[in-house]
Amino acid sequence: MSNPCIICVAITGSLPTKANNPAVPISIAEQVESTHEAFEAGASIVHAHVRNADETPSSDPEKFARLKEGIEEHCPGMITQFSTGGRSGAGRERGGMLPLKPDMASLSVGSNNFPTRVYENPPDLVEWLASEMLEHDVKPEIEAFDLSHILRARQMADEGNLAGTPYVQFVMGVKNAMPADRHVFDYYVSTVERLFGADAPWCAAGIGAAQLTLNAWAIGAGGHARTGLEDNVRLDRETLAPSNAALVRRTAEICAKHERPVATWQEAREILGLRTV
Image (tube, rainbow, N blue to C red):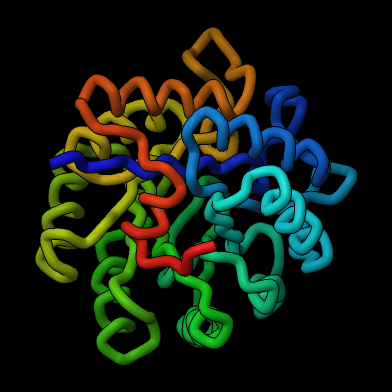
């Protein structure tokens, strides 16, 4: 039986700038164009942040609304996932776009260290974000920077704060957080299977040079993969990635090596239990 692999493309993030790589899309128009190219290359989820004109991160719901409209027009059926991450806003600003009813949104359920700061996700804010996602029928993607985050997701599901089977994404390779360690990765996989069932979908994201490694591990282990310029602006040490689409195509090549078809947007929606369009 085939086991399609969902490819998520994280197009922009909050940190990479055009000084890091000119291909990083900043304006709404650039983001829509970059997403369309990635969609045609095989991505079925777009993980989206928005930026100000000076490239600083923003949590402006109006910007998210224009981005969502553009993606729906040019990438019909693609799964739109908004970030509620902490770099683009403070407190409940981080969830101000959830009433726009994207298909999904990221949800970090615990705190951890980042390279130069603490990534704070206090319990009261996590619970409020989860309640907003429930109210607006937005499926959370649990961003697990630590084992405790997977266990917390199980607890939140048991308490009725998450609908359906949680979709957990392991984030590895962030400096001062969890490195790209194969033994830890394997334990994460076994923990998701133990807590949520052997058929529960999961994803992995590697930061920087760990992106290619985590793509290979996740695809080979039967999970789903995230790529994109948010996490990594290079194809290799010497070569900048020319586009988000180029990183998606590289991920699709890994799928082919493991004899896994790239999931269509229809298959991705079915796997994740999302509404049809």
